[in-house]
Length: 92
Image (cartoon, rainbow, N blue to C red):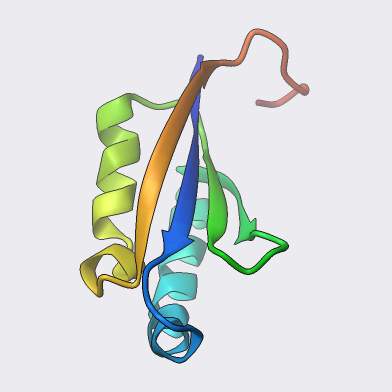
């Protein structure tokens, strides 16, 4: 099972990011509801966010990045870290 950590870094000032945030949050709700994302949240230092995907291909993870309103608005960029979930909680 391959999971992905998608780490975003904000590219715009906070007021510009805030303009896109409502669309970004709706996108995240839809992705978690569809089972494609397991967790999502802001980094504590406010520099971006972290998304944890469900088991999926690298191409599917990249599709999430490309469809994120933050990406299309130029508000954030993403770095992907993929890992084989050899040990995981029941249900994952």
